[in-house]
Image (cartoon, rainbow, N blue to C red; front, side):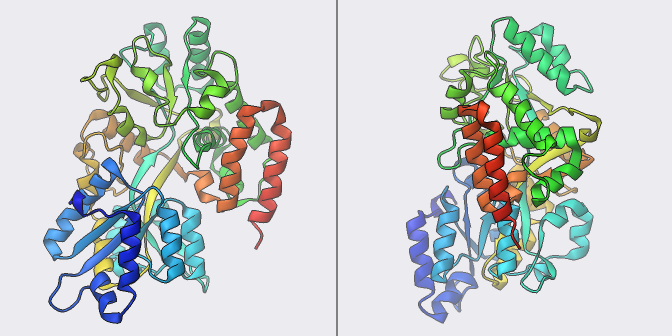
Length: 452
């Protein structure tokens, strides 16, 4: 199966060739006489994530005889934009942002998938909040299902190494009802003892800065609650307002206070988010706490334990987590999440069948059972016992058991607002004294980004 993945250039070439004639188009999308049907899928999943998706669709291919032709590239957005411009999109494509889903649905670029879904089954297996995330308003304003959630991630997570975390602080960190004040007290105590508490990395190619937005989003949600968070995402709450300013300042106290973040702001700006947590596993550790989404376990599993060539960190033994703590009562029981949405750009019969299959427990289990995948299913019928280790089970339990779940704020904002937010985080760490100017600039972007 992995050998079937194509490079972006070959994928675009094939899709372009498919558009040359109606017969060829049928062969590429819905099948043709004498040949198997094929569903083309474009996504950002590569490496282990690509293997996870291919494991999901293997049962579908065996059961239906339909071939799933997947293209995985980190430049999926650019490839999709080029395909759409040329009039030759894939049948299905991964959308990482709800904002992108809403825009494509309103523009008529996406095809509604209501007919592909068993509504009664969907209601039994997915909560109203998750079903709402799969819906958007179309060109007429009517709401339809335009995507499914293939997998999710819990972002309100703080990681540590239980074997190396100082014993005097471990009981405080893991005590039930951990609060923000207790967490920051543990961090300050570590710093006073001469060890750096926080790992921090904000670099991610052209999207650098987003790990810092995760910090700020978690603080807004866990201090001010879902209502304020929703107003901020919707563009009705100014960036200069007290709840948002206070969240930036709280993040700044972690990232910019001398001795709290490994290497200080300068190091955070050039350290990859994927590598920021590696010092958890050195001996002695280079840092003790890492704020990352559940997807980071796939990177932890690839690290070297204590510099060993052979030993890799193991869940619960070498890495475990505590939920991001509330800063005030309004933030109790909340969780920030992310997810990969799969939308339909060409409404073929084969694509509709695949969409329907991917919502089922059988498909979802194929990915989440893979050790170290970091993937979480939001299908309520997927048993916790199917997760491969106690940490992944606890992550799923926390995500599904949260009283109030909110999607990543920046991913839910208009693209121009998200880009400005990412860049503003980098500017803030470079010069925290410019916060007023930075927030004022974000408000100017907000006024343009949310125009009707």
